[in-house]
Image 1: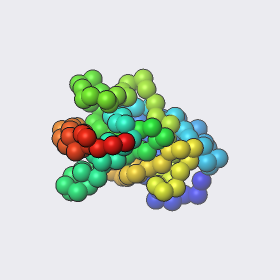
Image 2: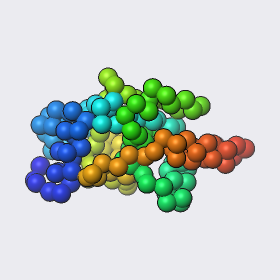
Image 3: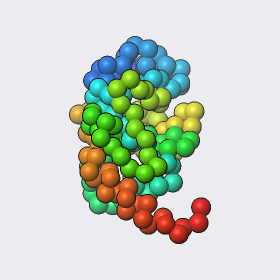
Image 4: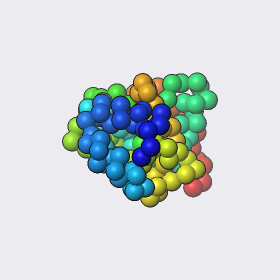
Length: 152
């Protein structure tokens, strides 16, 4: 991987997460996903894909600071401050914290690009900004309410 701003940012982000930086960068050089641990620098809130996208649109529309967000085949994964996983309780969501991993594409893989059905909606930046759990909960609740009665 050539040294770029994206690479420097990735190294900082991976180091903060206590990932094996060399293994992750090597996986990304092969256009593969890499395991990056949650629970140190951030936790993850997983939201079902359809309501997850609506949640992200609400956060953006409100001008809320938005940290990294990963799009998967089934979910939207939002990076939130560490410790959030222990106290998060919202219907139809799940969390990742200490001991869990995300399968992360290179931060340069931003939608509409994908790597094995994953892409960043919002890629990690330096310094790493995280989505506030309270803001996420408000947007998620509003997105769920707006979807009531909407045919899937």
